[in-house]
Image 1 (cartoon, rainbow, N blue to C red):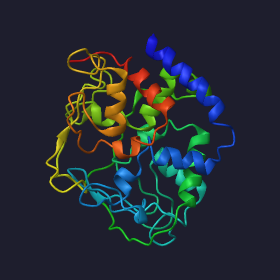
Image 2 (image 1 turned 180 degrees about the horizontal axis):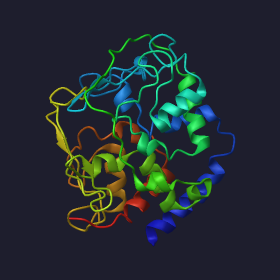
Image 3 (image 1 turned 135 degrees about the vertical axis):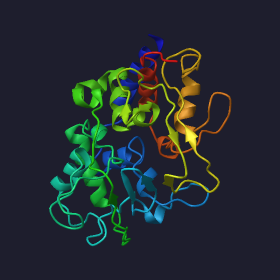
Image 4 (image 1 turned 120 degrees about the vertical axis):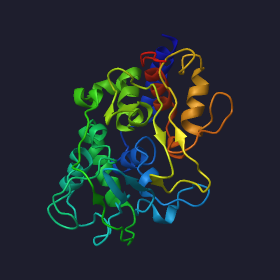
Length: 295
């Protein structure tokens, strides 16, 4: 109850600070560069894992070699030849929320790879989706051809229950629902929920962790990265976050530091989450407190 009350107070305080003057581009910039962490895949990084700002979203950030797909994150700058500059707003929105390329350009009309988390992004509120599109239109175009992906199996997308239920603008005024929205469009549970025989256990093991990420099938993270396994982020007192303080959870999200001081490794996008405002961090913490305990 204390967490929810604190988060509610922060939302009320933020309402006066975040005046309605925020433009769609500003809102889109915030979403893309924080909770959506688009640059975690689409922006190349240096050897230390820092994003190369001059090549923001120009593709080539991460490369994947999976049983069902091989390819490199694409160029999503407004470059007309190598990016998405020739796509309409509707085509960009459809790619984000439905995973379908337009009927022109490379691989016309085909589905985007499953590593484009459409099953989470479909929960974007219409105003936020429009803001993301507006921001992608506003960034500098970068000419950077990226090799075409190889599809080894048909694309099969799982459904995420929260995204299927959807959200409303009113939800954002409730701390826990706001946190659920942010965690959904941030596809947190895609990494933090185990997969068994190709099925992600959102129903019976949501947030339990245990999913492995290895340099043998994902490349583009800092030199020396040897892989990582997603931790349990349920409310379990021992196995999860139940014994952590709000401050410790917030630090893990925004600074990539565990409760015991260990650095959390990729693919955790804390470099982007560091830009989350205080009320959104508080909302995420409030929602994490509600995730059923699993050990």
